[in-house]
Amino acid sequence: MSRTLLLPDEGATAALAARLARLARPGDAVLLEGPLGAGKSAFARAFLRAASGDPALEVPSPTFTLVQSYDLPAGPAFHFDLWRLDGPGGLAELGWEEAREGIVLVEWPDRLGDWRPDNALVITLAPGATEDSRVATLAGWDGRLQDLTA
Image (cartoon, rainbow, N blue to C red; front, top):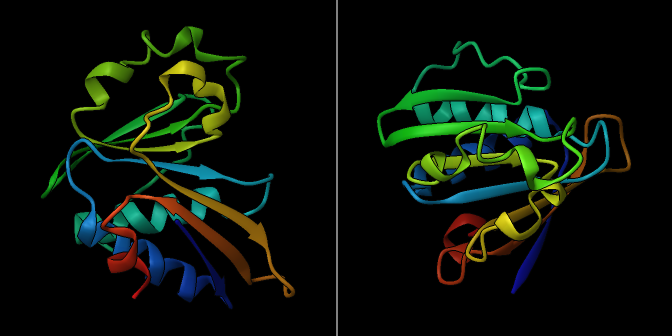
């Protein structure tokens, strides 16, 4: 099952991320797909700010560190940016298995290879018709996807 949503501006993207933050729980994986500039980092930032309850939370891009961790009210969360990885070889060193006990947000999940979780929510973002709009296609999360897109 999948759903496609038009997100007309950054506020709509942040609102979707906030709805997801309310539903996410430890053990969840959110895989953010899409080309450069599609809004993956902005989505992750909005999710983490909403999940923390702090709209000013500092959320640096993990492009160079590859992973950033956050202590959230719902438990730990880990934001992975795998752009610089060639494949899954470095995931163990990044603490992937331990991170899976919390909530993981993964940009460039194609680098996960066999480590890609079967039960993940996949959000594919694409540029929309205007500079600030996005098209989001959501798949996975059987039984919970409807709550997210309602």
